[in-house]
Length: 142
Length: 126
Figure 1: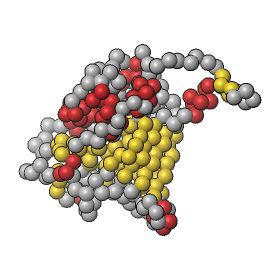
Figure 2: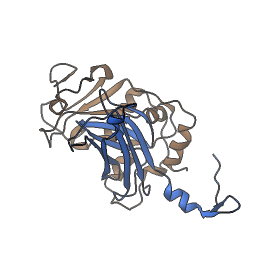
Figure 3: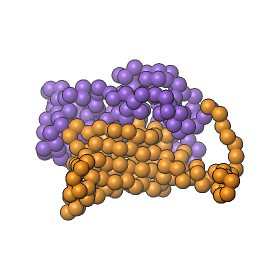
Figure 4: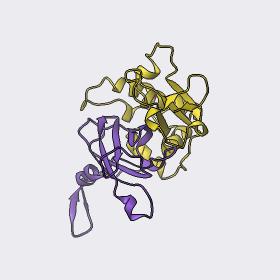
């Protein structure tokens, strides 16, 4: 089995990048004073996700979180998974790149995570450090 | 894909161990538009970037590093053609083995959104 990094390098040489039409908005319940964050999928990563047979199963990343630094990790040599839809890829990315206490463990009433079309993220960054997720509309509010 | 299994690489005059090439290669990089609705122009081994506020970004890796002791570098400039806009500051440091903090500042040291941000990671892969 090729190392994941080698699979990514090989994929970059043959796959066209794919700009996602989605963004993930999230807030950290452990730091509610900080502004809403915006996760942007990488176009080369998205191309790999849609192609299939490159990325490892998401649960390998989750198990590797508990492995101490310097110890062997599972995800680089795990058997790759098949092609995902763009929506499945975004859900995978939420579980990979957003801390579990936000997408898994939070039990409060406030909406702290939304997957939205890119057009709903403001391009005007005025009051950027005061952005919060709008609790009633599918859009961001400053 | 074929694999060359060699200990050294030579051009006929100079010989170096392949470990120099492996250890010296960047393991992740990105070129980010960090202003407006941020977006990645290109990258290697980057799964996403998160905008955490003015001048604050997180670069997440697809193939994680072995530990948090890797090195980060990069650059920041605010405009493509204006010399005055090139003097921005950029810091990349480890958040953990799976992501790095990338922060950009103006010359006064205040966090600043910057249009051209690069981040380069050297170190050992997991």
